[in-house]
Length: 99
Length: 346
Image 1 (tube, one colour):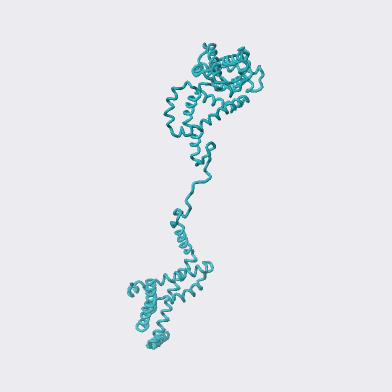
Image 2 (cartoon, rainbow over the protein chains, first blue to last red; image 1 turned 90 degrees about the vertical axis):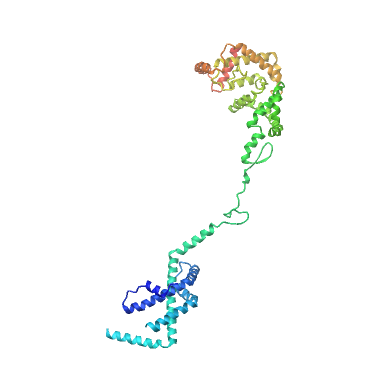
């Protein structure tokens, strides 16, 4: 399991001091969330959902907006509680301490 | 810059004040989390959407379909491709015309050879015929005894005997065709003659009437060999024998026949089938003897090297005489020629 520090090191902000602080945390949290979701198999589930939708509607009738609208509601519900808790704790710590 | 900095500091101060309330922190955290999740979902959806539009799904699905196509079928009565096993073709069954037995087409020719007595066994049949027809071949019957042990040979011997009877009836037919001057009839005669060469009682020539002999001599060379005592069955232009020999044979055969006609006219009217073998044999012997007496001085027909050159020379002369006689076609020309020789022999 990749640690937060590791993810931090991989993402290298290049902007000004303030921007880099914000974007650093933003990228860091997003990257963390992505790795967690891949680890727990959520990404594969969402991909299967997408494929089903594409197959139902046909590739040529498909529009990105419709796909996003349909998948977002389902995808949110599929996020595991453990990942959600972890991410919320990190966000809280960021909001209270670092700002 | 100072004003914006002040404004910024003011905002941060308000934000920190707002964040002192833990409920607000939870709300903010939730909203931030939602945003993050939406971001990730958006990333996945874009990825899939791009794949769908670029046809990557079709590729993946195609691979899956191929896998299903190549699956080994494990069902009863089918091979691994799900096809019915190939049955042996029903239409390839033949029925033997002689014994009405159904056979595969690939076995038909070997069966016919056995059933109708052709192929390797034909020599056995011929030897059997010798044993049946001439009673003098007692020595042969001793040899035949180990042939009798052969299973497939003895099994179909009855059928062969019938077949042989049929051949006997056919023999008269071939003579009729000769009378018509057919080429096929000629070839039949030659084959018949070759088959009857083994047969000591040579019915073919001896049983003929004068007219039949004349017609036959129009078709073939007819020179009697010294070794086999048979008529040469090749065409009129047979290179082995000279025209002189041919002429002599015609003269001897036909003149002898004519004398016999005068002596015993009954024999000529006798049908071929009812004609007695013994008479024919005696007649033939007499013919051969007379021929030998007359032409003992001529060279042997077997040594063709010497005779062929002389015959070729004579052949050059022949067409002129034919033209003089004003024969209309080639077939009638030997007829005229033979009759001409006949008159010379007389």
